[in-house]
Length: 309
Image (tube, one colour):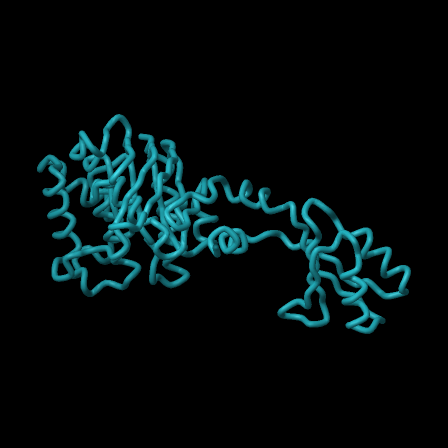
């Protein structure tokens, strides 16, 4: 079931939390939704799930419109909000039964669905415990179980690994990837490495507008016009080397590496390479070039570049 967002705008007073954005998520795709705090991620997710009404634009979940068929949209979506509201005094198994009844699942199938969710979400050892007794990781699993229990075709997950330890993050990530093979998933997160490892595509939003949309490879390619090299040169005086590197006509900037002051970080001018000229400079000056390593652009760098303004 595809999600199609067209010209979505949501205002709070004079502020546009979401400003005329459009995108599509295909069936079987896991979309990573990135942006700084206040960028409009949660507002967009709430609009898709019909938790709030947009001022302008249209959203279709499959063939259903959030405006004219909100009940059908809700039945198609499993939603895990950031704060994961759970009834902490209820045992896991009772809570899932309660959610199944709310979702209108046939009474004859509720027990089967509960057992299925417990198995899928790895809750076998916790099913009789009260939710308040569980670790944060297991609470997130319960949140995923409630989002999945009615077998929705769409999953909206807002910061599903927030506050988890590294082992729990890996477990939830693998669970989302397994679930995402059959469903349409939108996943928001501040953990960029997690998004890159989990998602098929990344959408970055800043100040209510989409500033990037593509695979992590696509986003890197867009930034590859700027060559960055880490260079170690010996047998020369540092300041003299620094000045000589700055004078190379293909070099845009030179800096000392923040972790190793015996190494230089050199950024070439857009669409130019400085490797040969650095090598020739070392030959000419009789300096010893012991290392020259190209630096791959990181998703963190791309995110920072797109959201700092």
